[in-house]
Length: 290
Image 1 (cartoon, rainbow, N blue to C red):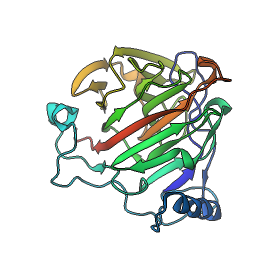
Image 2: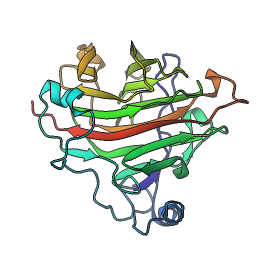
Image 3: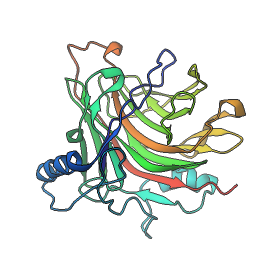
């Protein structure tokens, strides 16, 4: 597990802030924070991930191929209903901390609040990202990415403060936003979590394509995206809910998966923020086979 400044922007049409504004923290800084996390979670095991910049640490085994045990909700997954076959990477969040992920540390979205390692929790096979009344929240990225593919996650989002947005998204490996694109294939912006959006960002001037679906996000649902040279398709519980086929809008380079709970104080009362959270049961990644 490594630490990095996370994406700073959001998916709504009026936003123009890059989701990533800093460098990965490496070397001594990572080791020090990892030691603190070990104390917090009570685990003696070490955790690190890909880093760049001034230093690096060794990487533990990350998400792997699945075991014989079937994941919860598999019967309504896009992988099952669309016949995607076996995933190339899986994380069931069975360990004390998410291994093989880069965990954000630094300023939050548009400089609001902070992204902290303490906001990330793994218990009983569930990853939880928490946001507090001060705008301290978290996010994590699964590196490296790939050119085309499929990604799916099982997510539950309890009713939350409207200033907290829960997201699953694809972000460019080259960090060249906005021209490198951004695929927010699940973004819950309403506090009651009864509506979920998708946003496809493209071009140097951050043009966006938006879709919306009514769904009870406080229950478990499977959210997936398929990205090929010809299209981006979003799936909800294995069924297509949006499709984009304009090739000029599709990402130009490799992308990787991110999980984020972002703070948008302008969407509510920043002086009366209720603690909020999102939960993830599992994440799966699939290679593109043409």
